[in-house]
Image (cartoon, rainbow, N blue to C red; front, side, top):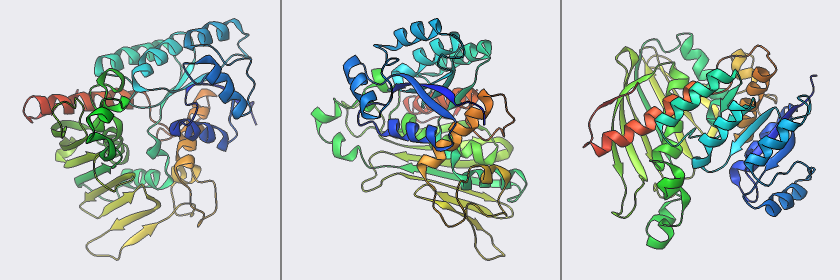
Length: 378
């Protein structure tokens, strides 16, 4: 096996949920080794966290700029090859751009940037760099999502009629009704989160899943947001009507105040021959519906699945695989690309997905602010 890829981490320290997800995912397929990091804005906190997860502290840097400066002093075969950006949203763009400009590959959390203009600037930097850029739309890594994509591509549904995607959470419901609390959460602060909370944080995952599975592009949309309180600047609930290629229409529903919901991402795709339904909280079941045949259930690890699905399955049938495995499949795809190996285009979301995602987020905000009108995407 080739040597492990030297991985740097930005953010994701302490009790960060996303941090442990990335670290575990990077280790699952034995492709990466963490060699340097800035886990926290406070250097001592980064050092303490490195001790906690038992990695050397000699390359735990004071800040991001120092990481770049010191790593470039090292021989090419010793320095960090790829950096994983796990910071709050407002840092994604400046960090990713400087990494690309200095010859590092990038694995980046979404949303990729704070706005569409930044996304286009980053895309130019990426093209000039010739480096790999992977965006962690985690749910594209689930084997059954990949199976759905491959079966739709092979014509299993025929002409697609309608798409219905939703992403419901309830966690902001415990915060939003307290004025002091809602003013202290970074996801509700446009200077840190960007122009959208709900659609920018989770609705964009549903958007990405629609395009990933169907192979179609959303051409225009009409959005209606709910902010709940006049002093709240960020959407916490939204519904988006979408028009896609080939006269396909659908809806994307997203909420952070859906009381009692946990991580309710789900998608249904209806076609002339049948339909698919998949839910993130039951990720190992892909349902195929038909007007003329019994309900079919596809599960991971079986020989009837596609190569793309099976390449993301690590255990025999009947052994559930979850969110860590899904993220690990994105890291695996990125590893193949970094090493120059052959890989399927569905193995990890790219810069192109990130740019189109920011176009989607900005268009939903524009649609709502202009009085719930149709907006064309680029």
